Figure 1: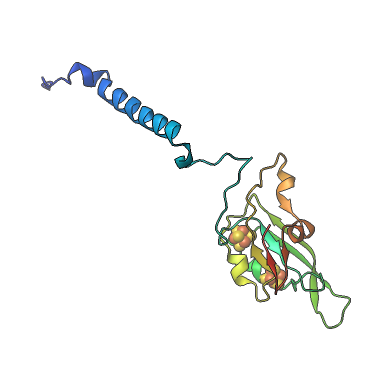
Figure 2 (figure 1 turned 90 degrees about the horizontal axis):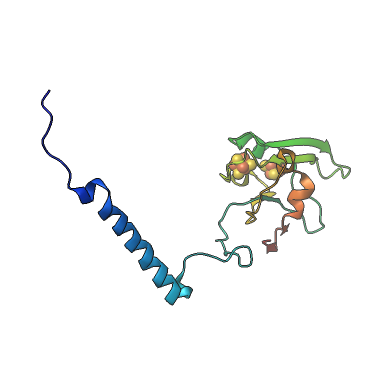
Length: 165
Ligand code: SF4
Ligand code: SF4
């Protein structure tokens, strides 16, 4: 097979133009940011935190009734709708005969959660909502299992008053 006689010029063979272009872009951004720091798109985390949209889907919150009781009726709809199978509920009979059931245990495995919001959509009594907490890093796998108490602590939600953490 005959070899092509075409050869790249030296500047292209040593990627000189690409390197110079890259350095030019870096220098442009460096001096722009130096002279106009207010226009930098980064946030000085963790000293400063970005305000996310209220529609942001972070750690779930279990809402409470005005009397402070958990709103969840352990109907399992959220667990059934969850595509990641990360909600585990143990239902129990409520001492109040007017309330049928409540969740004795309500755990969410945040290592499996994909933050799709299906649990929030499926709940018929507005007992679970996607909160705005996003700092969920941890060291042990079992620390990613959020219990009922953790999820109730995650926000102060009643039907009439919404306070996002
Ligand atoms: S956000 Fe999606 S994946 Fe996470 S618990 Fe809810 S339904 Fe499951
Ligand atoms: S959070 Fe809502 S959907 Fe899930 S078990 Fe409780 S009441 Fe049912």
